[in-house]
Image (cartoon, rainbow, N blue to C red; front, side, top):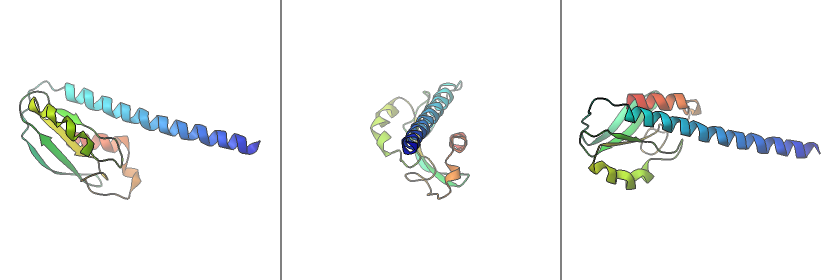
Length: 130
C-alpha cells in the first residue's frame, strides 16, 4: 500500500512539473506577444544574423525580411530545442521583419552546462538584449 501512495505521489509530482513548464512557456510567449505589439514607433530592421553576448555565453539571432511593419519575434520551445522548425514561417517576412534566435544552450547559440541559467528570468533578459 505504501508503494501505491509513493507511485501516486511521483505521478502527481511529474504531472505538476510538466504543467508548470507549460504554464511558464505560455507566460513567456504572452510576454513576447505583448512586447511585439507594444511598439509605438515604426522600426526599420535590416536583414542580418549574428551573435549577442548574454549572461552565460552568446545567443545566435537572425533578422529576415525588411520593412517598417511591426516586427515579429519568434520563440522556439526549449531549453534544448533549436529554432530550425520555425523556418516555414519565414514567408511572413514578405510583410515585416522576423526575428528568430536560439536560446542559450540551443541550436547555434553557445552550449552551456550550468542549468541554473535555464530560467524564465534569464530568457526574458536574453529577449531584452536581443
